Image (spheres, rainbow, N blue to C red):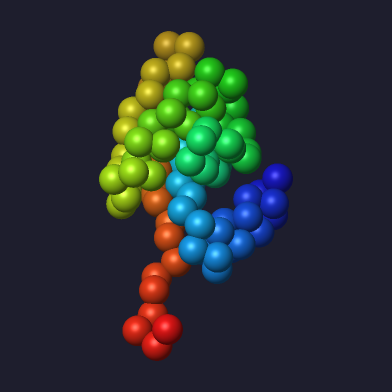
Length: 95
């Protein structure tokens, strides 16, 4: 799944399609990733369907604002830190 996420992230960055990458940076499973597009489509797994849903909703809002943010989520009594970063292709001045 990690290779598929990397391929999709690269494709989106190349095409200029906005995508948010959410990754667990504290808690378990650390390093788990989820890509989120506008409209709620996602790829990946953070270890819990409910967490995937909550993070996807949060990431959709971040897609509108841009940037990168870290947020805590409570899951089954555990606290996880998820860092979400919006990627867009940088526009060059030569085109």
